[in-house]
Image (cartoon, rainbow, N blue to C red; front, side, top):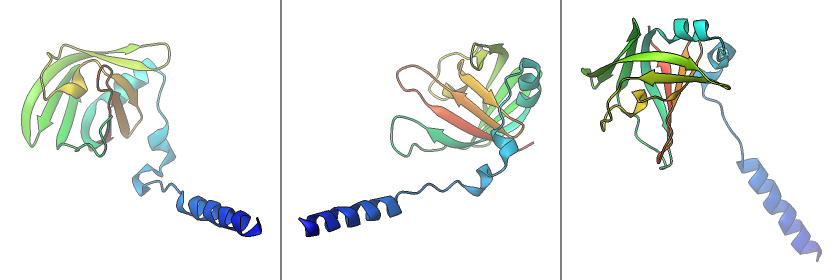
Length: 144
């Protein structure tokens, strides 16, 4: 009985030692993770140039395309692989818990992130959350 207990304890320790979570250095700035719940501040922080840095989806390890969003004058210009692929008008709507980005984007294969996603914005980070059959989260970092 004692060898079984020892083996179980050893197995538990090995599993516990292998379970750890490392925060990437780019996420260590607490200001990056302070998302606003103020509509006027969200509108102000949303303006600028954003680069897609991560995608979270139902599929494992989804690719991160080379995408930039240029937000100015209530328009979002979508740049993919250095070429403009779309320009849409938008409005930020406050919901009970967050914001919704309402756009006039037409359904296309390459503009999924600007079709009425949920919105979280900080001074340097932007999260767009899509809903539907393939819910995904797109994380952007401010580049200008």
